[in-house]
Length: 258
Image 1 (tube, rainbow, N blue to C red):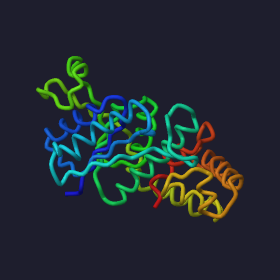
Image 2 (cartoon, helix red, strand yellow; image 1 turned 60 degrees about the horizontal axis):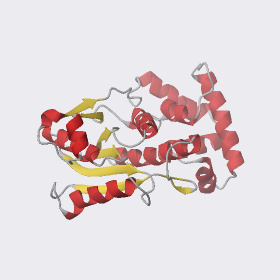
Image 3 (cartoon, rainbow, N blue to C red; image 1 turned 45 degrees about the vertical axis):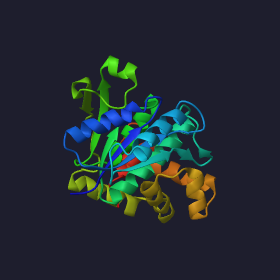
Image 4 (tube, one colour; image 1 turned 180 degrees about the horizontal axis):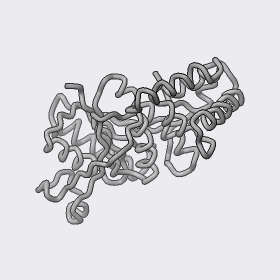
């Protein structure tokens, strides 16, 4: 059996993480690692949420070993993100989470992603990353808790009847038909120029910003932007799209390329 990772977006309520984890364990899921996704932890409420989870997982070892607990700070080209509100912050956050999830998928791990914590924007970009990277072995979940349980702030429910873990249906873009996969490979290998292909391959692998792509490839950020703009136009024509795609749609369309 592949190793399973539980990834949860974190906001003001740390109980979202433990309640969802408890529900998965009750279903017989064998979770080996827990990762909470969060913004900058030098302010409330994130600081308190992380402190309480650290106490539960690391100090008190409620779940025991070998379960591992980690946190993942969302960051962009300009550093750690204090929030996820503006378009630039959302793009940086998406790229940060995309890279994390892709690393675990490449390692052959099964991922359970809980979208119940944090800002709604976090749930939206996490969902987008899951659609690109997940396969049928992975799961996306939303948590619904009894109002009394939410008010109590308890990390664990007295009864599992007070917690409902809802599977979220997603489109698994990795499971394209063989002819579609051939089209993707033909587009990248034949339609794109060698320079465009170099940018796209690195973007698919690591979900980097233009600035980081430029630094990694020894190009200017303007050159990267121009090459991606050219790629978007080619994507629109090749896949007969009604509108010119953006960065996220590029990853959706070409995410199966390897």
